[in-house]
Amino acid sequence: MSRADVGFRVAGGDAGSMADAARRYEIVGQGLEEIGVKVRGTEAALAGAWQGQAASSYRDTSSKVGTSFGAAARVAAATSAELRRYSAELERCQREGIVSKHQAERCLAEIETQTRLLSAAESDANAARAELSAAGHDGAVARAGGSFGAATAAAAEQRATAARALLTEAQNRERSSRQRLSVLREELAQWQAKGRRAEEDAHAAAQRTACVLRAQTVTPPLVLAGAAAPGWGAAAQEQTPGPQALFNASIGLSARAKVEAMVRFADSVLGKPYIWGGGHGGWGPQPGYDCSGFVSAVLHSGGYLSQPVDTSALLGQRGILAGPGHVVTIYDRALPIAGNPGHVIISIHGQFYESGGMSGPWGGGGGVEKIATPSASYLATFPNVLHPLGL
Amino acid sequence: MLLLVTPEDVVAASGRLTAIAREVEELCRHLGGCASAAAGTPTEGAFEDLLGHFSAMLPHFGLAGEHLGAAVAGAGRSYSSCDDHLAGACGLGQGEG
Image 1 (tube, rainbow over the protein chains, first blue to last red):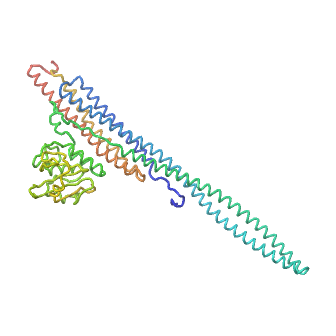
Image 2: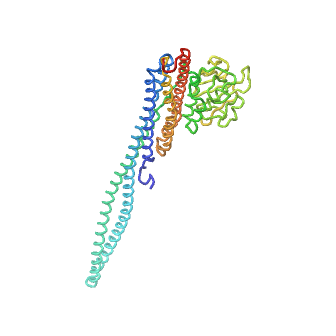
Image 3: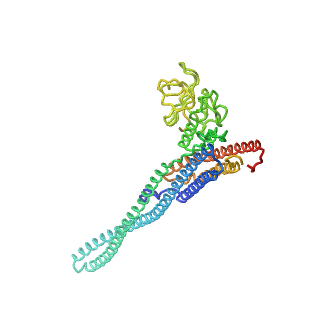
């Protein structure tokens, strides 16, 4: 039966799956918390064994990492609690909705039956009234005939008696059906109100949960940034996840997650020097980037590009489309134009990034950096305005 | 030991830190199992977005452990080597200092 039939809809979704998701987030929260404790425990275990500048730097970093794990654990726990609350509310609303729908359907079916019975009773009553009228008329005519019409008058009286009985019986049925219909309509209205309330409650719960979920943010730890103490050595060069790791993590993700991965990567390499050809050797950590190496790595972090490409090859790469994007736009100049050499810059959420290029009032001209929004005339020197698919 | 460092402790700590990446990966996989939990509800978009956010961010936590472990391992090796050199220079065996 459709919504139009019963006047409301049972809330959709699987409360059981939602409860399972809540359990999963709870486990993730506990896991992150335990790891955070482990990181802090390592710091404590080394407290007596390791001293000096490196130890101090390590303690500072591990403390921050432990704190990040703890914060992420709290986000997972809050998400779990919200999902559990929503699951319970959804289950209650669905249970009430199903019962209300079942009862409303029963009322509607019985109303249909009673309406038919009432119609039949009304029809029978009308027929009885017609018979009563006809018998009355025949009796009057017969009585006017004096003794000659006595038998006919008696027969007419019998017909009238029978018609009166039929009329009474039909009127009783009519009254009974009307009373039952009145009760049923009231009952239907109550079940419909209950069903609508369950539908509204489920909707309100969903809105609240969506709002809570949207507010959750996890901030990963920035590891080893600035760590230059003895012993940190080569590992310290790899301060942040490379674009390959982010690419792997970005596959199949939502647009928002892709953009976050791209921003995360771009921010992580800020300050790296401009090196001609930098970033074109692969997706691993680089000592520096040229313009297209940097933009390639940013795009790869979001799940785009299978290999670094230069300014002349960006257009035509799978997943890279012509025109500005909603969130991410690439300004690409493959050949020198009006004294400007080939260059490429990228804007994410309105924040421009580049490596190299010419300096202007917007900044730029150095290594990997954030720059202010360039002038329209400068942007016009980039003939290819591109965007990643879906962004 | 000659330095104010116990290299073995540092290396052991590095092992525990390096294991974090695997543990986080496991958590990430566990979370991935509920991708369609909100299907058919108005929370679907927000749920998927948050799951995507977690899936994108959790690997960074794993890498944090990996990098921290690698850095500590580097420190352990470095100190161990220094200790050996010092021990050699002083003509002492390990554990005699």
